Amino acid sequence: MTTTEENVPEEGYVSAEEYARVRDDYWRVVEESEGFDLEKVSLPPYMSGTVCVMRTFKGHKGRYPYGDLVNGYCMVGLHRYNMIQGTNYQLSSLIKFNMTMNCVSSYYLTLFAQDPPASVKTFQVRIDEKAYGRASSKEPFVPHHHGGPKAHAPFVGELPRWPSDTDLSDGRRFYMVNPSELEATDWIPTYLVLVIYSHDKLIVTRDPDYRSKLKIINVVIETSADDSLPSKDRLKAKSAHVYITFKGLAEPQAPRQSFKVGDHLERRAIVRRVICESTGEMSLLGKLCGGEFTGKQRSSGEEGQSSKKARTRRRS
Image (cartoon, rainbow, N blue to C red; front, side, top):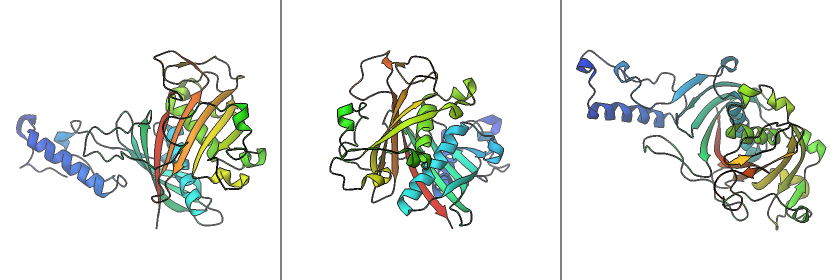
């Protein structure tokens, strides 16, 4: 994708055919690389700024946008890999990432991770964002998933309302995570940060230390009523709702919801996790709940949800 004196348009004019050729060539290369390793891919100078392209960032010293979101996506990708492979890889550092420039984006992350005492390995993680449970891809040449892991009731449709005390007493469906398990489970805080940050990317500007103020009070895992997993294994369920009660978030933000202000108040978040048995693809859908609606009436459970899909691979 380079230019010569012979193919540079005169007087800055670019025909529709030339535009389409350059655009399609760019996205063909992106597709061939599966969205990763695009450092040497570029547009001709005369087309700069006219074609929607991926943005590439280095992970050096954390100088990249949406740091909490990107780091959370790295950890979610490793979490998915660990659940499927039975490993315990932890994020060492982010090397680089590419992202599509849409209202909802796809992220292609390359990172280092380690499962002590094993050596550091390179992983590549793809995260596809969805807004309010809907995939978004307006241009066919932009690589983007439209589907998602298949699930069965109650892990389909809108997220549920917060369960009643009576419901929570059903040990076949609900498991209360004990303090030692919570301390050893880093993906639960990651889920919480992603729910908060996905609705409020300006929170870092208002309060750079917001994460250190979050205190998880309790967590309940919901699996299916006929789940045969022992209680201690519910944390690893492929399909689950995670109910998180926490404090420390002074001003929650969610679409069409208004919350009381104060970091001493208890907040609630719900996250749905579904992992496809056949493909290994993982989907997360989350929301904050407990606010008063300020817009049109929502259907049951439809409270400012955000959704992601994750794919992870280890590079040899």
